[in-house]
Length: 616
Image (cartoon, rainbow, N blue to C red; front, side):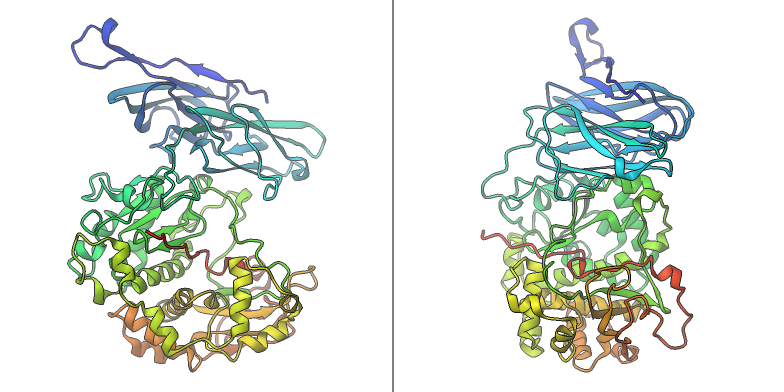
């Protein structure tokens, strides 16, 4: 299908009511639609491309046509999949150098069922990571998929991480907003050539100061989910800005405990502290809290945070004491394929750490001898129910919020005046994790050194490369750690302990951990040398978990730890999946289904990472 650029002229609007329109008209920039042969099922993007003046507060809406869910409605680019044939009209309202402007655009789409679709057109600040994906049906030979740039400022594909289906690149430097147009091509199984195009608007970004807190990446544009939040003026500037160079005071952005006077906050009070890159992320987050926080654990744990950031460019998730905010990868939140389309797919930067090690330590959460989370192949365009994200988001929240309450536990909330910077308040006291290390220290130096290789990118020594799975099992199993990631540092040790305990007590979900072979072939894949279910209940480990829980969440009844199920040993010599149905008095897991469950390898131990604190 041939695609050409189409420029649609904007409306001329009167800036001041009652003035002579010939004298006071302001012409907005052009709206750009880069496809002319549009059919149902294709993805397209409407681009607000203004070449002079400052554009702020864009809001897209649909005027007529088959209903479209505009998930990027507050961006300069509205990208979406055309639902059906018909005539479409959209408008975008925005401020141009302070004046209110509204532009309209219309197009028609024919019926169709495309076999190759490129998604999703969007806007990105220069320096942002960009990912685009090709979706295809069974008629396409995926090995023939290729990407090329058609126009715009030159980009360089990430050759290390690119796959036929995914194009990844960093948005190039631009002096003004510029459109990059790309084409994906593939052959059908019968040899016919198919193409589709997709466009990305590259926006000029402000220069990052040399002393900026976020000096390593250009951050995506985010905004308060609650437009009239009492914290709307400082929320983004204090926690997700490349201009941030000093931790904000508690007067500028208080912790949520201040809004609730130390009591359990309401969901409304929590949502006042939420920043999003897309509204759907805030909507799903709220729905989750309403549905699955029966014990108020999450609400109470949020008291120690200043903000929750949900943005398409966050990967992996993290908590940062420099800002007091938690940053969540929205891949845990999506329910529809259209929501998933808006999320950046750049790989976890730790993915190749420790590849020379001869063992793997996979983990999973299970209930009733089955996985509680599953892979959803992107090309299948799956839809999830809210219940499908229940456990994945729960363990992530318990983990990240444990970090927040470690740095600023409830005993410290009243010790600092509003003029105190959050970072100073968080660092002026001894953390719970420090006391954990003194009272219940991990013993294995070898495991700590291996964790530095696997999670921190240290070079492996010849000795470390020689360790077999049975060697590592001998180092790990006698110690009082319940995960490999615990050995990264004392804060991750605390986080894994707390989330494992809470998942078991609150949801009846247990954590499996094992030491296995690497996956060399389909017949020799993740063979268990040693493994255990419910290790949190082991003597020595349960005492550590009790200490953490009573300090992280004072409302938690630590006597519940006595009800933890006894640990269950895995059968050595079987593979990771053969060791799924090991709990007694539970339904047998379906062998076919188990192969679809997530095999979380060690580099994805928690889809989170520790970010270094600034020196100022």
